[in-house]
Amino acid sequence: MNAHLKVQPHHVERSAYLYIRQSSMRQVIENTESARRQYALRGRAVALGWRDEQIIVVDNDQGESGASAAWREGFQRLVSDVGMGRAGIVMGLEVSRLARNNADWQRLLEICALADTLILDEDGVYDPAGFNDRLLLGLKGTMSEAELHVIKARLRGGILNKARRGEFRCPLPTGLVYDHSGNVVLDPDTQVRETIIHFFETFARVGSASQTVKAFRTEGLLFPSRLHNSQTVFRPLTASTAVRVLNNPRYAGAYAYGRRHYRRTIDGKKTVRARTNDDWPACIPDAHPGYISWEQHQENLKILKANGQGYDAARASIPREGPALLQGRAVCGQCGRHFRVRYAARRGRQEAWYICDRAHTYRGDPLCQSIAGPPVDEAIGRLIAEQMTPAAVELALDVRKEIQARHEEADRLRCRAVERAQIEADLAQRRFMLVDPDNRLVADTLEGDSLPTSSRMSLSSSCRRKEPPRFTCDSKAARSRRSQP
Image 1: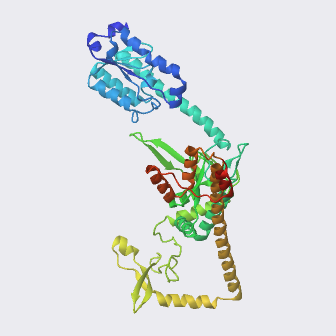
Image 2 (image 1 turned 90 degrees about the vertical axis):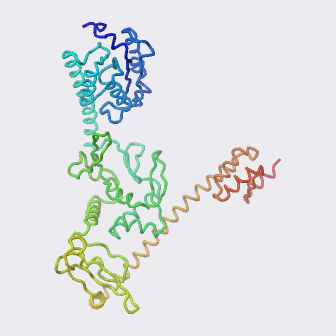
Image 3 (image 1 turned 30 degrees about the vertical axis):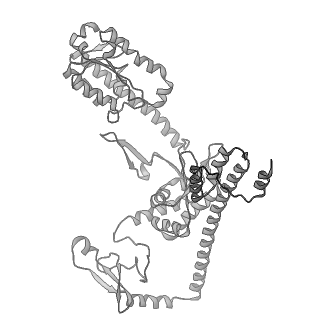
């Protein structure tokens, strides 16, 4: 049927909506010819009888994918206006511009049929209320959705094929970098390497991510973190960072791809689901240098899993603060659960009690049993004293040496931080010394950056009072520069 015969006067009385979309911002910037073709559809509407002021351009979905309408505000506005009877015709260069999802496309067709709204693309004008046009538009929508699936499958297949060979380049965690040949190597920064090594050694010693964080805080150490611009900064270690590092197989020298599965929910939000090791599309141990071995990585995962089992009977927690000798180790002989330790001040001294009350706390059952701590600790102390052989004394001395080595390692890491700060200070000083002393616009900025916060505040206040800023620099180079004419 001729397009002019489908366009009726009541269609022309309403507005014409021109929907424009491109899938990514790169296409918006580079594929300018496609945008020109879409905007050129205004001429088709004018030729069909609409005035130029009646044409409403909806182009605020530029750079958005058509896979769903959840995040496309322009498409939602278009559907709303069509449902309210404001649109006489909806124009798009092709069906894929309006929707890549068959559910969204069929919803638009249904609303257009109810509101007696026409649809125009590059091939012609369609009436969704007509059976033949509705059938043709439905086929176009199905082909558009299938086309997106084929494109994704083709790209995904190429990525998976490279990933199975370990050749697909993924973003590396802090401590690993790509060299000039594209191979994964350890970070050339000595402070970064030694800090990560100290992190894994600390976790192997304390057996808990939270205790590792506390150890770093006690020792005054910072952990490296890589920003989006590939710059490495040192920040206080957090529990989430510690767990993320311990779960990352790249630190064990293994190439891993597909550890997480991303899906879109009905509201358009992205959900992340962690996969098990057997479900990873690619996992190649010993693919590149690492900070720990693959066996040590598996052992760390077992420790994390055991720490996260809550109050299971098989869980043995680490020793904590307090004088009780068997805290976190004593097991109830009746129910098999670990004892809690409670302290009470009696007769001017602190006494420990081993209490099994988890069933009472969670299910209201009677207390299993409670045992006074001093008799148990005395028995354990006698047992330890009996076992204090010369070999045990030598072992205690070895432990002391190991503790001393840990303190020396922490001191060495702190010295690395001091060296880094000294390098940054020397760099700031060299920049300042290279500035022309008469160019105060640059010199004031560099001086302000090199001063502490209190000095910067006094500098800004002096500038507001129109007073010349006062700086002191005792270096010989600075005095010689000020003495020059």
